[in-house]
Length: 110
Length: 122
Image (tube, rainbow over all chains, first blue to last red):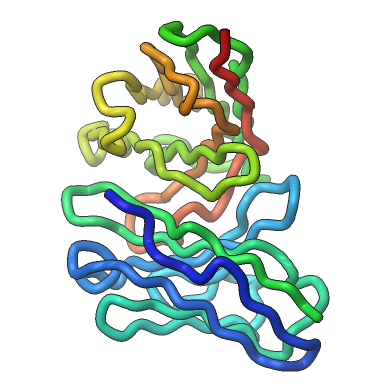
């Protein structure tokens, strides 16, 4: 199972919006609504920010939103803040009861 | 407070074995699947495998690169899951996290441990 495809890096200025894409296949992203997104700051464990494509766990601000079209899922962060600078990973259920992560995207807040 | 604490990491030679533990507290352990995810230094997250709950027959699945070498188990009486690793390769060197996925219509991987470092080197 190959990793889902994410851009290696994205950037934005405080207050702006950025989107991160996550491309898979019909066997994972395109076939199921089980895409989740994780934020990871250096030296810390990942934290879930979106699950089931567009659901936010309790405590995650509505600046974070998720969507999916075909085999590509997207994470959008609006109103960028300095604390949003981190690595972001998508994750999807895969046919056959396994899971796969994306390669990760480094978000830089300019 | 939900907590997951990994232990058992260390330095092991190629071809060797190691058993990691994931001790849980603060939630109903028996009602969650436990997944293992690893991260090589400076690299991305890689899903390793999972064990489901008793309600789901303790089913296990693994990523292809570890199938046949790694075994996940759990002891619900001790609220602990395990990752038995054998025939270790240098490419298995990574920080290993355990994370939970509660049964039902729940948020996956909502809590993670701090990770335990496995180094495979001669």
